[in-house]
Figure 1 (cartoon, rainbow, N blue to C red):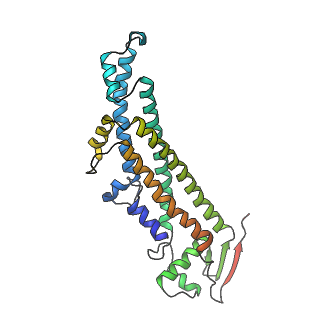
Figure 2: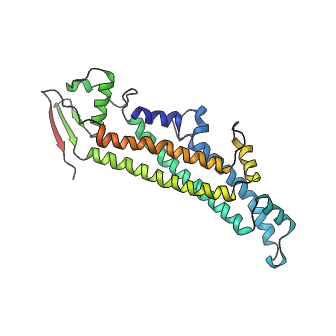
Figure 3: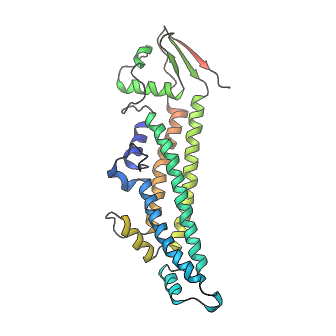
Length: 271
């Protein structure tokens, strides 16, 4: 499961961007950063036109009706009035902010994943696992044993041949991952609500032209609803596997293997 998470982080659904030291440039089009960059481009392009639209609208008394310039611009965005235009700007801005917060949080989660020990990929300090006198022979067994010690916050003293384990560590790990999943679910549900809004108000030729003119990267005809669907897929890509991790920690992962007879084990009782 850890190996699957590492693959998701690196290639399947990467966070991306300069701060992500794991994902590759070739996978940028599948990254959360690509989605954010696309939405930012749409928002910036829309707000540039909105500034002019506000100035032209303010130059007239509303009682005199809309000028030709304002009427044409509203028609371009398929908006009925200025209130609808302002609402679109605020909605896009909040969507970008939400996705950006997810990126910052998932970069931290990604660094935690990098430190986990996979059955195939290894990681962490597994070189001395054999020194504990465990009945492990294959590399996969050593990696799994090392992961069990890591999740249980095992503190090994090779000098005194003692091992101390945090009695609450496994529960705390499961709780922390559940919090990550909960936040992702909340944000995915928000994106699903925005998708309906996008279908109603943002699925226009003008918005599609902006999206396709910036970075469709050969994906054919695309608009804002397609970009939001990509965001929802990115959330789903993480939510399922992280749920498996919670199950692994809480149920599937074996207890810390007993060390050899010359070792002493004990519990670090959490306060």
